[in-house]
Length: 148
Length: 404
Image (cartoon, rainbow over all chains, first blue to last red; front, top):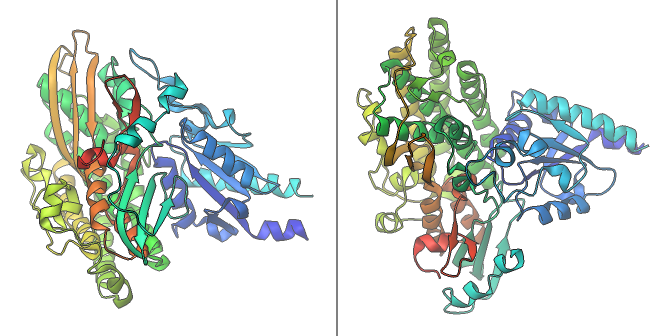
């Protein structure tokens, strides 16, 4: 019963941790835009960690945001799944790996898996909405298996 | 070191002390359901009326200007494009254009047209995203979805031209990437899409402006008059909505051959800021059509006849969706970048809105901040270092000149 109920209303929380905004908007476009419309799979975007099931993290996690991200993760009730969306969240992308004379940025605490456990990764800079929808579908599967 | 670095107590003592106490302070952020991006606003309210407002734009600081120190231009372009995910073309074009003016690299005519086309498409999708975001903050989801629906064809055009929906990587030194040239079939497809978009836009704007509920919530609220806009140096559509005729496209040689109008409104309230952007969408489709006609079928889009060399510091301004964008750097003998500076429009726009939202209801103040179309990712690039070598992030207060 629980599993069925959970399957019918997945709440996704989107946390933006200091990237370039590109992934953020692609996620918003995947959920809101009537062309992609993630909401047809009963996936809702929420901003409240207490009612979230899936945490989507975009961006390379700057040092200032890292504690906040940890707090948000702790606030989400079990079972929870974390998906890292975009190259920044997976490996830090240009901010962590490119740099001139002074090296890459020293303000990055990420990637996300340094701070919280990550269950799914969506590559791309930024990932297309189609990829995000696929990832959400995969995350729903993980979630429903776990809830038993 | 790190504990010392985070010690702000010294600045707090020195900063502009609040002249008077207020009834309540409502802090919002860094993470809050009302904010898409992390920033902190502190509203000081009395009886639901905002008496003072303070914005702090710390958390997304990534040290991009520091990273760019000593990088070759080609490689640096990968990073400058990723300063922002909305005006990625604006940042890339600006950084490429800085080196091109400094090294006197000639750009083929078709390449210029494709750059203009990309910029106008970007303006379209950015403004439509803004309208969607503003309607959502207002609480009108239908308009938000409608706007997203209109935005999607623009994204698909950009995807068709460049192969990516956000980081298009269209300008390169000496022209544009050869893949992005506009073949006949592509041009025709874009023109068709533009016609549809134009019709939809007109319908949408008419519907939006005649909606009594929405307009009563927007008009007469968050008023920023011409003097305030000039005083805090608002740029882009935020300034144009307050009657300041400031558009950097008028001074750019790329836009000389195009036939377009500047949208300037006088009201300066939230409705005017949304109206300006909605009307600018129509101007953008007009410029985009002309750009396609100039670029269609021309395969000469890249000039490889140039050499990188030493260059004194160059200053470069272009008009991106949110206003003026300033990039500046110099090159040493090996073509490595020194002293990269980026100044983005949100910095001053947000400072203007900080003043404009005073005197309104709290619910309207949130909308007022959203109507300047804040983009915090571009905004957070520099830290202020004081005489003792301590670092802290730049706040909007620094720009206003009232702070520590």
